[in-house]
Image (cartoon, rainbow, N blue to C red; front, side, top):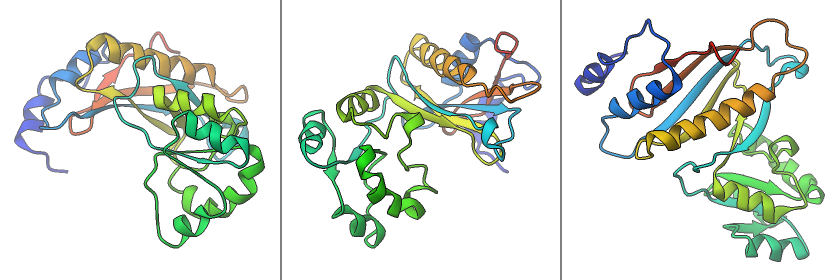
Length: 230
């Protein structure tokens, strides 16, 4: 893959053979972000899990102490009193059955997170083929299937992110924006890593965290030392 001149210049600042301390890695990611927009800082965690086995799945959620720097649009599936509760808590969209054709037929996906009360999961289940592949399906482990919709919405708006294994058993998560201070990014990184470490499957034998890489949207990856994480 051919990279531009700015990327190549930035990449020279990073020693590929070195695993950096998290604070040094954050500083390097900020230094090597050269895009004209406020890039997202992402963490990529390669695990020793085999996600094909249910007992080795890793999935959960964590509220980043400094948020994600992104305005998150929340859709809530609810009925009765929960509709008012969701609207009062700041949900961007609230509805029920009437949203099914809009999403299924019209391709409406102007939301980033979906929350549902348990009694609405029968309705939401009909959207599995649309929401599932996009990672938008509500899930109890991520706190997005709950009767406490107000708390769920507030947590998401405050910077709650979901982490899960992809098909390659890697976790990809945002931990803020390049415009964040080094301290803010480091705090968010620590919060995410702490949550992922706690979620280690008990069935897993061998090494859990294989490698951790920090990168901005357009910047080169910086390897983070896993010595303290294992």
